Length: 297
Image 1: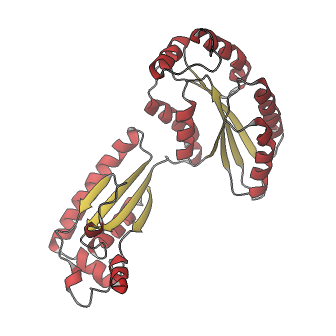
Image 2 (image 1 turned 135 degrees about the horizontal axis):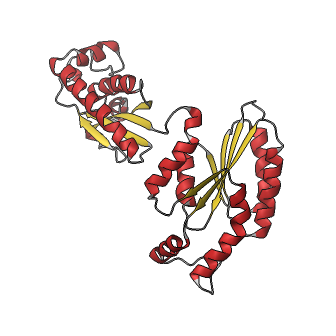
Image 3 (image 1 turned 180 degrees about the vertical axis):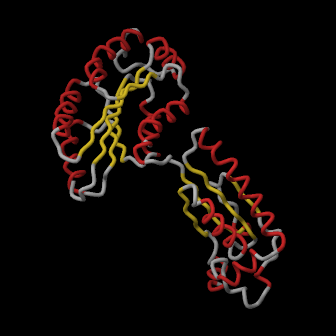
């Protein structure tokens, strides 16, 4: 690779209805560049672009091998990858019992692609026969017969996130002003309008919660420390539960009246503390919005 960093390539394949779509979403959460059923003729060009870019280091290809032409293309690509330097290639094969696949197709009322004019079970058996060689070649085989979507995600994470030594969980902390509306994508919303407002102190009015005088003013209020510690403890208690339920990201919104002082200060401190344990980003949606509104009036 141009950057010298190893390239991690995962081929996601398996039986139709065994969970390839859920697997693709899981790999996206693991920060893989995911391609779903790219036409065979485009694969060589895509591979050249990946090698030349130097910026893509994790690729997951979702492959439907029911087409013999597609199989031949993938076999050729895998041969090239196996002979390439600085490339790690793995095949993830998703399987399920015939009875479970039948039940899933019945539930969704979809037609099996290999049984358009015949029995569903016949199509499943034909596909299983066609994929036998790829299943034997796979490094990882997951039987999803008794798995929920969440359990499949967890199984994929257990195989593919440990290599980086972390879990795919990210926290977005956002400050905002209630006067401009609650963020529609927030998972948790905390209202800090009960804290004294620096806005009414003339020297602090043009400043924000990022400025030390305002930050110190907010944090030195008698009510702030007790509230903050209890809120932080609540978040530290609940975040592992969200992870166990399969969430890969959380948005925590901290709101005050205008989103300029109190919410900004609390969000900054929260980002610093949660950042000791989790991947955290912090944004201040409305911090400068009051000034923009004044300038337009």
